[in-house]
Image (tube, rainbow, N blue to C red):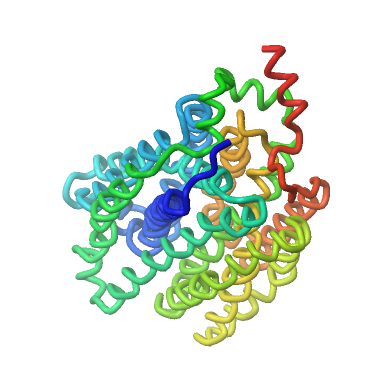
Length: 438
């Protein structure tokens, strides 16, 4: 297989980074707007709690569609190429995000407003369905074996950058009077999405197809039925991988989305401390992610992955204890420890872990299916956490949810094989036999 040039590898990694920045910028600003504005703007006839639940329900709807979109687009990634799918994803995400910023509100068009919001949310989710998983696949296939952990963490780095960008925009708008924010301020972050998609397309269209998919196409071994082939030979690994990455899915929503709502609605705090905490946690994550990726190259995927997951489990209740103090410094500390360190370690290592679990013929489908299987849980996490808080009357039920998820993920990683090796296809022979049977 021909190795890519340094320039080609750099261009591909930059493309993967930009795409995940846009994806997580999109989803973060939607989640933050849900916490701060959408209940009042799109569901004004409901009570405060009911409006928040309704707004979070529209947030969750997008994650329900992601598995379907992820499977369809990921299949194309294994049949027509990784690059083509990534271009499609970028266009869908960017256009949908920008259009949300142009939506009329309930006061202007009545019930049509939430309907349009849901439709654009669904379009946004279709684009995001295979973005991150395909970026991980491309990064792993452009990496050398000794750098696969590090380079496969680049999409996770993009997650932090996207959230930082979204947080920074909202932080800049947080000084607006409430009336001005609801009138026009909330639209600004979404309209920025139009600019991001233009930049992303400029970079992405100049990227060559991944070396491993190019080799598959050259040799005529591209599979026509990647999902069937995947589920025939790697069904167990799909399940383990999905459970293993569920903590970064749930943790991202608890610590980035629900925490803001909890601080503002339950603790009667201004939004600034929580937004600042998310900002600093993601800044810390920019250092943690490459260190964890490098550590996974040196010590293996499992020990580093488990370190992040067990840290999240250990901090599940202390996180809420720190929030309960209402001390801005301790709120920031809580978010840095749980999300900036614990979740980011797990997210960083999951890139190489997922890619190395599957043969190149079905890798894009495997990575995306594993991620998509736990996406509905992620999407409903703010809704679940809000409902648990209301039912229990205290944070302890949400703490149990966080700790239980982290321990389940740790069990899955413990049960999985160590995937670090020079060959990222641990079951190549098995997969080849399966392909011959089709």
